[in-house]
Image 1 (cartoon, rainbow, N blue to C red):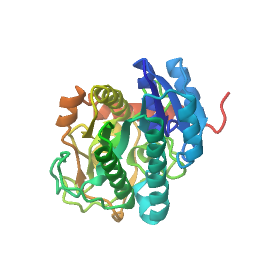
Image 2: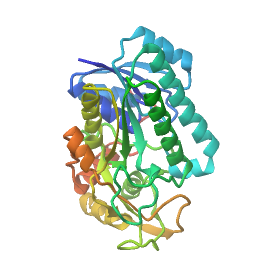
Image 3: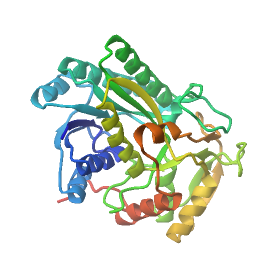
Length: 341
């Protein structure tokens, strides 16, 4: 049984991954500063799994706090989720994104180095790639982020690669996510954006529930099947399971691996609207709006490397993603409460 440190543990990906770590028999030390999450989410994890992590309310930019945690606990590996993550916001606030994401990662790696913990699974993104003009993206596709969020993720990858070259004993998995959606089948945890959602699925969910009047579809003149943007949506539970598989692979030998995590299937915004409406039985009013800065027409994965190396494959369908998102929305119409007994 290993002890895994998870940063950003109360967030959307963090909470789902905690459950899969517990299911796999691991112990967990969890960190979060609650800048975009709530403590209630960790209580929900306990309700689902019957277990809870040792938790610290800590910002990963606080080096002294990180050092203290590594001294107190025997950590075997780290999963690093903590980062600001909204593409549009990163375009408007680039300095905030670079300072937060890079500083936090540098502090964490330095604390790991000092504690001689050299196994890390990093939450990267498909936004590190250049526009492939409709082709499936492999791990060797040309890089070229179109927004500061993606640039910060690529910079963090580069930092980790350089570290591994300087100290060959590092075990590093750089996992490039495509578009996580859905929620745990219990409906107890899910994506809880602050304010107006930045991502498509929670926006659709809130329109379906009547919380928002209509969905803005950013761009209908892309060179795609229906003019709207195409993305590779992956169920958050499938994504979480890949992290456990990556930890197992890294335990075998020092290496640095880069893997795409997606389904290999692209769906347009209008297809997402139609599927969600069919699953929920609710109309999804929408309005075409201008393209957003930093968006590209089409982005989907070639996930074959992850399937081969991790013995992992995304198995949940688009209908599953929509159904589980709708269950979360119905059970939590305003997201997580600020307080919960």
